[in-house]
Image 1 (cartoon, each protein chain N blue to C red):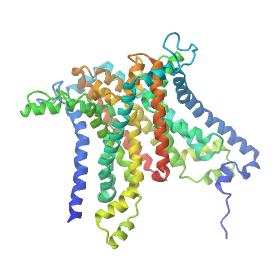
Image 2 (image 1 turned 180 degrees about the vertical axis):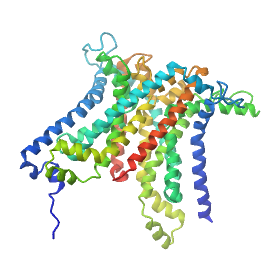
Image 3 (image 1 turned 30 degrees about the vertical axis):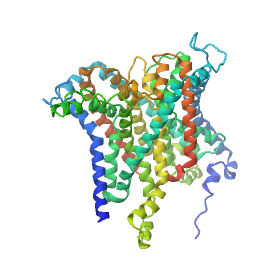
Length: 260
Length: 310
């Protein structure tokens, strides 16, 4: 009797939480097809106007393009650096190895507000103007732990004797890396790249300090929150971006699961 | 026929005796080493170590006057002013307590989810897990903003209640306070907190339950004597994975907290933007960084992370 009651309680709890988790997301979607700029009940009319107006809203689209540029650049850099640190971590032994790895995962625990202001300080002292580049640098730093963990866990799954075999057959070490190691960890690299992309794409806490005059989409969204009548356009774009991000996440997941 | 014996991987790869005989190959490896060692080293020093050191240096600067790059006589005046201002400490205390509350609530709410996924969801567990994680992958700013739309004075809850005639004046207590921040953050963290608990639950050998049942243990005792103790590492991991980023949180208070819901991170942000008192902001940041690092060291002492995520 007790067991049966439990077997209903747990799924009920799970599904009510799922509803609660999806409610705000559904709400946003509703907001983006609601004819009035204010979402209040009852809803009067549904429309795709906001999506149409979106394509005439230059500033909004520019901010989305900025986010895209930053995410593409920082995710590529974070993946390359993550691959390098993974190889250093698992295929070499050198002094200071632990320190390097610790530094690479440190951004996971440094509060973003602290890292943000520290980088702001650095760029100000060096007289480097805040731009998409400075945001990209910050995103590369915070994405590195993710790329490192994803790539290293894949590389750890391969016995180093495969490389040894390649070298016994006459390949030098760079060739072995290029022809043996990189192809093996390639799925993990793709997954790491996509993860880094999504980390960067809606990152706000760092970008707010470092974006300067070229806002990324979250920063722009934040600056527009006061203007209620501009909100539906922003949300329409956000919904489109959300769908895009989700697709990326699914692709990343597929690549991560594609085990040899 | 015997299998060809390979030298153990470690001896070759980690530069053991085998490698020394082949000079050319060792050279390859060494050249490659520098090629892949220098870029990450440079990056981490330039954009992680250096900024933090600079911030540390700035926290000993007396004021903002003059060029950013000028030299200054180190002084503890910023730390003295932080120490003398009780509201900073109170806010640090409040932020820590808030994070503590958010961490434990998230774990408490996530535990049944993880339990369901591990033991009751059956073959659909994978699908259910993805369903749970999708909200976590959607934009953080957006989900927080959705709560704003939900809770605001002209928001969904208020307009719905007014429409149905339950209330006549909008409820203003829903938004712009610390409760709104706490609710929003718990909501944001629940899916995330489920993962380490689930990982711990999945490691439990099901035979233990059979054995316990054979020995006459009721489900309640099975849970308190087997499930709970064995999932404790996951519970702790989930707690710290929520607690640590929450201590430094400043975005959610900015969006739904208002000035009444500000946390410690918000005063740092203020001193670097509006107030433009970077030395004081640096001192506050250093205190926050130190507090976080102490917490993390504590967490690594308690939890065997490697074992949990293997």
